Image: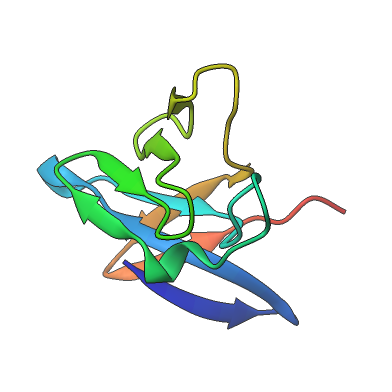
Length: 87
């Protein structure tokens, strides 16, 4: 996983198992910690601050449930990753 700046917005790009690519706001919704400092194992992203966990394929919270990451539509084309931000 990596953080990139696109149109003055930061985005967390996650390469999930199976080759799927996901794009999320790079900040944990719990206490606004950078998710890039967390750990990605299989499809689970764990925030380093308080160990909140998220499914990187859906963005949904695993621990605790009822939470989610802000996701952005993503498309891959000829090796390029395209991210759409809300207006």
